[in-house]
Length: 481
Image 1: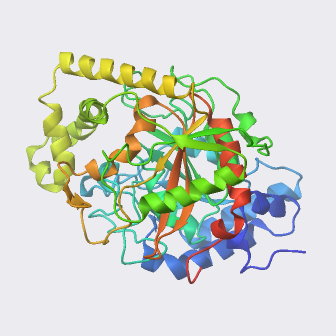
Image 2: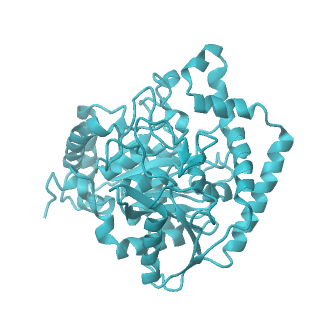
Image 3: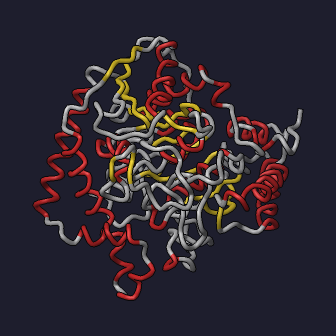
């Protein structure tokens, strides 16, 4: 039976792809239904920005339909609407980075991620909102304003892939792309009740890039409402690229294969709040531990895990690496001294701190990172997967810049309240945020699963088993969608 227009936004990406290819629904109908959903919900949530005009998009959808009529398909995303995170280039659209200094910059070519999704048949309808320069896990900027949480518009959407997460949760996109340096694919996923995967280091190469040898903390990756869709998008985004020498060479087609597996016997190590080191707001640990009970019911074993390195040492090494990589990204905007007044203080702090770093300090931090990686390998001799809350706070007031304190503990940097996410990033490990459910406050929270080195597929299979065991909870959607 052909899908009705009001049903189209609620289909999984896989089901939508099948409906398009089986001609149960036309690409024009998909685009029209998507634009209707966006027109209805986006004015309040502000998730999708720099939108392409309706008539242009409908014409592109007609072209996709004409291809199908000739028996031609570009791939599984044929005719599917997609919006690109506003840190990446999409030809003919603005790449603002959320900065007033970039508000008029129009990309003359696609970034690698947009290239690959377009090659699979996606139609780019606009961009998704992000914080200025992608810094801070709260999506607001002076170009477009704030993106509001899909479940409570008075709250933050998280970030930096906040626009992507909200667009997914509100059924304005079937899948979404994002990027993750300090939890930016995982925090907003957890705060909007969707899935977000930070792939293994090198799994999804980035291009264009200033540096392809050292700057390996940030990565692009997929977000979705279903793990199957997440894996399909990863199969499109991943794969080696000649201009990125550290990209992984594994055939990305493996992620488009079956995800069904028997999780019995999987060993999960619960990191919790690191024996009290990480301050967390009330209710987060309890909710995540309840989600962990689901794994026990699936035949997994869950035991406490302890990091093999003092977490404060990890944080101090992380600060050096982050400043060393973020500072040079901000530096070109400060060639004109007058620009300083148009850059948010958090970005200026990263830049100014980077100027005090020496090569010796960076190498010391790199040695600490190496020790941390080795300690994680030792943990994976005992466990198959590690688990930890995806955030230390619930979604906060959308008008707040960042939490000054967590559970009575003062935060000494603008991002310390997200310290919980650095462990997968710093070790280059895959990590997926799965919906943990809702707190007493009615707000969503995510549980982060961390996999072994390059263990993306095994991690996706475990997350898929979790989704199958919690379908009713995961199927919940925001009011009005």
